Length: 253
Image (cartoon, rainbow, N blue to C red):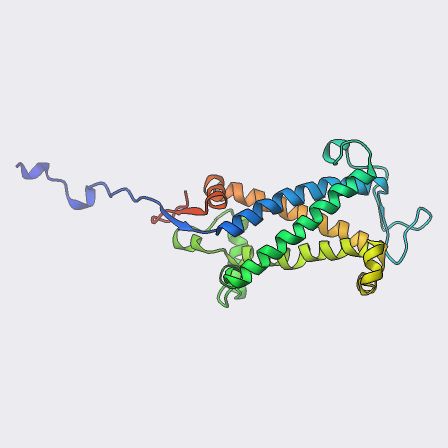
């Protein structure tokens, strides 16, 4: 063998590292996630049908045409193509809304019970002490603004911003939307009169319901944007079959 034909070790090509797949989402988490997607989509569309019947929001115990509106969108109602049904039918809109509202409640309770029983909320959603350090949080904000996402071993867990946001949605916005929706029901007011005092009246509850729903829409938009930018294929795979790919070299496929 000619010594000159022997390549130094440093010039040899490095072995190809295969992505490592981890189990990121359990079956219950994946199923409840997609049921939530369906429920929230249909709740939004049927809710806009209901809102178009009286596109004014008030603050206080009562709200009528002669009262001053806290928010007035009567000049710009939501288009029919985004409402369910697409034609004006308040009764049908309410039927759709109530059905998927209760399905969302049942699905949310299933997720919560499973999360507490299997430790999903404690292990995966509660930020640890290091993640809550101001310097660490500020660095995560900077990384997100610059679209620098976790890679390698750091991608095995949610970052602090994800955990805080998911907790606010699951334990804040969704319960608020359900409770304000219940407050608008005269029948439930008779059974649970404290709800009217809690939210300052049925008109105020309707306004809070609209603001909460708008906040959830904003969350969904940002969430979808992050899913696409941080690796659409990998994120979708993890939410369909639970498998999330991590490249040992530090990239997330």
